[in-house]
Image (cartoon, rainbow, N blue to C red; front, side, top):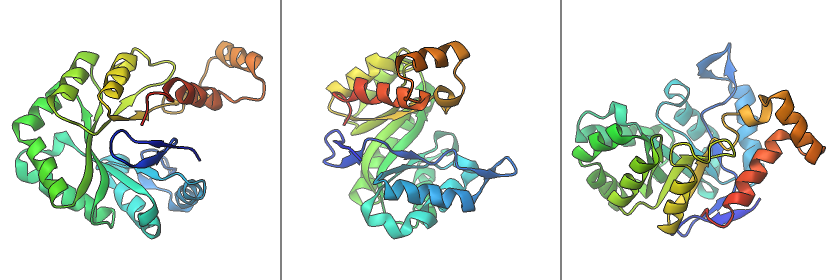
Length: 249
């Protein structure tokens, strides 16, 4: 496994992280994680020396955090755990403390290495800002419940730049792949965050699996003509690795 220095955090993070939003499920019910299939997948990631695991309050109907915490408890000291504050659940300042404390209980840990404001857009950002979310995050760092502050993002590039300029963030998470270089934050936002010294996490490098399993026949044949032995997933990850290597972490 290759590792990258993650912004200015001093952490060395595996180039490939593990997102905990799409575990195998029982009877096609996204709220019921199939633990018999999912536990070996997480263990395989550990064996391959992946050290960044990303979950969230809403994943798998609220069951991802508890499953991840239980399954990775024995590996806690060798991995980084990330979870996210859900803006739609926040009505007042005290909700932020309550939810973070519940997340720590779910994950069976005293602290989160990385904590993100989840899926920020202009509305969510203004809502949380008005409730003093920055004060909450800084207090949680001071009392040891979280170590590094960031956000994930789903809106236009202008909003992305506004959010970055509003605070000295340590990292962000954006959607980026060879089909989405101009989507949301896009390449421009990626460059801007990198210039700020932020760590950048890429979500959807395979576009939710579509770049691995749902290419058109013409696209699949074109990729195969260039390199018969390379899979569509490998092409997508190669783009992710080569185009971002000089910018990420």
